[in-house]
Length: 339
Image (cartoon, rainbow, N blue to C red):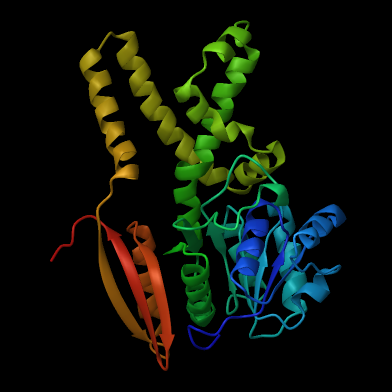
């Protein structure tokens, strides 16, 4: 995979919703890919639709150039160690877990940051398992990658694969920044959905509420249907950032409650106008394109600083090209072109 058009040999370890969707997409795109899952029934299911599955993890990663690590968050450190020990120094490793700082620190302590790039595709459903996997799940989705200075070569190789094969948008971020951002963007919404659905479950009017529940309730509680173990692992794995983000949400909710108690309609309108700006921006967010190149043997700090700024500023990499001695990124920045 020295050049952008060289397709790597890939393994996917753990083939639930996310890992399974990665496996199916790589297989559909014609790459040499093999999967592995600790569950025999899952392995049989993948084989039944023509997807190669290894019986052992060691067999899956043998001779591979890129390995995706899936599975429950608590299993990822052990899977990383096993995959790293069974692959060569030029094999790129990445994960798909929903928290990054802890695993990044684990990899750093074991000298793996030159080839392990923490990752998190921001896509999913409230279903689980290979039966829910979709090969087009990541098209247009944000896919976070957390590059380290010594791991730039690995990051670039992944950025090419993710933008070209998955049609996803790479968001480069520092691992701790990722965890702070997803706490408010993803993890607290799971808490709120669970709280709302759980309150209804305990209500003496439960059946009547279920009868009247319409779009706002269904939208607001969708992720409460996520498998409980997956949600609990995600929240526990990002505990401090989630608690900090929850405090921000609680403060805003307290403002709404205080205005309601006081009959302060102007404040209610103002707070909802403020909230509405973010909601509308999800559907109508102008952007402008930038192209930036770096010498592949240039100072890593310059490229890393720029990449981290891209992600922190809400921009996405929509393309990455590797040519002799140069890496060229295509970026979509939010907002109007300042030129």
